[in-house]
Image (cartoon, rainbow, N blue to C red; front, side, top):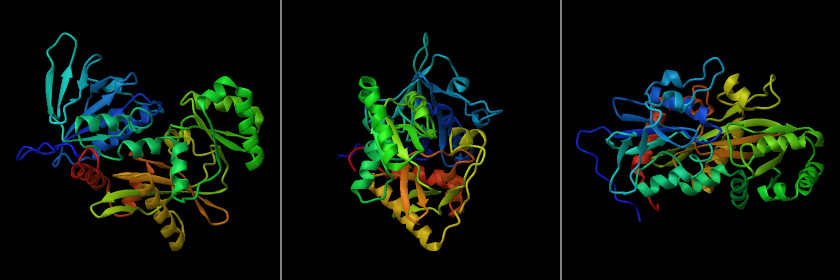
Length: 382
C-alpha cells in the first residue's frame, strides 16, 4: 500500500529539502554537488531547505551558500564548515502523516521547521545512496528524488549490480569478489584468488571497493607486487572488494531520465584517455577537472545501441528518477556495461547534467523534472 500523501497548502510552493554530505568517503563531493543544485534550483517555483549530514551522522541546518560549497585551491568543502551550529540537529518525523521537521539544540526548546514536500538527496556512497536514506524516507512517508530502496542498494553494491545485469542478459566484463571474511581469515588464499583471476584474464587488474563511488579507493595493479597495497587502499573504503580485468576500449557514459511517459536516454559522452593519470581516478575527475566529450563521437548505430542498453540497465535494476550508465566500447565494437550510478554527480563538471544539456534539457529544467517525478510518485510499494 502507498502511504497517504499530505495535501499541499493552497498557494504554497513545494518545499524541497536538499540533503547532502553524509558519512561516506564521498562527503566532500556530495557538498560540491549540493552547491550546484542549490545554485540552479528555481527559487520562484520551490522553497528550499538545505540540510547537511556531518561525517559523524548529525543532520545539521546549513548555510544556503553555494559559493562555500565549491572545491577551492584543491581544498574540499565539508558540512561542518557550513553548519549553523556545532550541536544543532534536524529530526525527521517517523509518522507518515506528519512531514514537519524539528530542529533541536542543547539547552533550547525544539523549533518547528515546517513541512517538507520532497527530499532531494545528493548523497554519494554508503549511508545515503545505498538505500539506507531511502528506507528512512519511506518510513517517514516523504517523497524523494531518485531510486527506491532496492535499486539504490543494487546500484551501490557492484557485485550484485553485475549479478542483476547478467540475469537480464546485459553484457558484463570479467570480475571477481573478495569478501571481508576471506581476506580476514585467510589472506593467502584470497590473494591467490586474485592472482588466479589475473592469470586467466591478464594483468593489469583493477582493485576497487565494492560499495563506493567517485573513483574512490581504486588502484590499477600491474603485477602481484602491488596487490597488498591496492587491497588495503580499497578496504579503507569497504571491507568487500571487487577485482576487474582491464577492458581495452573507449569509456562511454549515457544518462537516463524519467519523463512522464517513462525513462529516456540522453546523448552519450566519452571519457577520453587522461594523459596525466593512469586512469579516470578521483584526482583526474574532481581535482584536475578532466572533462569528457559531449556528445561522444559515435556512429548513429553505436549511439542508438548504448542508449538502448542504458534504459535496459535502468529497468533491470528497477531504477526511478535518474541513472548514469557507464560502458566500455571494446576494440571489437561491443558495448560492455561497467556500472550504473543512481545518484550521479551534479557538480559543474559532472557528465550527467552535461549530457542532458546537450540533449535539450538544461540544468534547471533537469532539477525540476527530477523533483516533479518524485512528487508524482507515492512512497511505499509501487
